[in-house]
Every structure is written in C-alpha cells, then in structure tokens.
Image 1 (tube, rainbow, N blue to C red):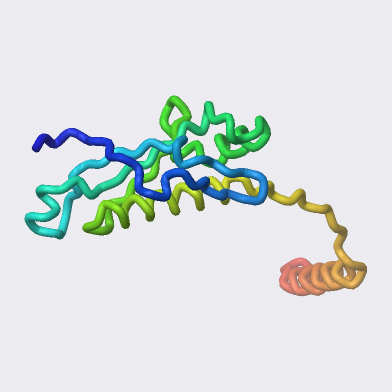
Image 2 (cartoon, one colour; image 1 turned 30 degrees about the vertical axis):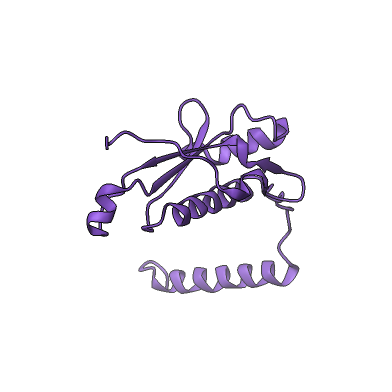
Length: 154
C-alpha cells in the first residue's frame, strides 16, 4: 500500500445537507474528502490504514453562499484558507476513519457558522454625569497631592 492520499466513497448519509445556519445549507457533495495514514499512537493499525481525514470546501467559488456571506467568511477564515480560497479541516485524533470524518465535518460546520456571524455595530455612548464628576474630583485630589509635594510651594 502506498503512502499517497486516497479518496473513499461517501457514507450512507452523504446525501444530507450540512446545516450551517437558518439561511445556509451546504450539500455533502460540495465537500472533498482525502484520507492519509495517521501518525502517532495506534500501533500496527495506524501504520496500515488510512484513518486521517482532510475535508476541503471551495469557499471562494461556492454557489451556496451569497456574495456578502462569502466575503465575510473569506475575510474571517483567511488563516484557514489556501491561496485558491479552499477551506481545509483535518482530523486524525481517532483510530476510526468514520469518527475522524465526522469530527472534521463538525469542525468545518462550526468554522463556517462562526464566520457567518455578523458582528454588531457598537453604539456610541456618553459617560454619565456622575462618572464625569467623579473623574474631575479625582483629578482635583491628585493635583492637590502633587502641589503639596512641590518644593517651591509654601
């Protein structure tokens, strides 16, 4: 068996959509799975089977997001993207390829979900009258303390 990554057929639930939020659904067919041999604990099993999973999603060219959503996701996920705008998520924690596949898909869903949250605009507020007065009183006290320390002051 070579050390080249392979692709495998989709599991039985391959037809179901990934629900990102109320507006965005992505079909599993839009994801690409790649499998490689995992490193680390696991003994001979890990040396003979390809359990590590990498899920790829072409975020830059996906028709499943609107322009504004795509731009927001590309901006927020730029550290996770390749130069071509492909989002890649890896999982190699489990000895089971199925568990790694499910975990990688869940990580991808969570990354996309977080990236599509539009931050609220900060509403500018004014300090309260009492906080302004307290600040000015504090400044006067500090000023008086420092004036008392000056050598030329009598």
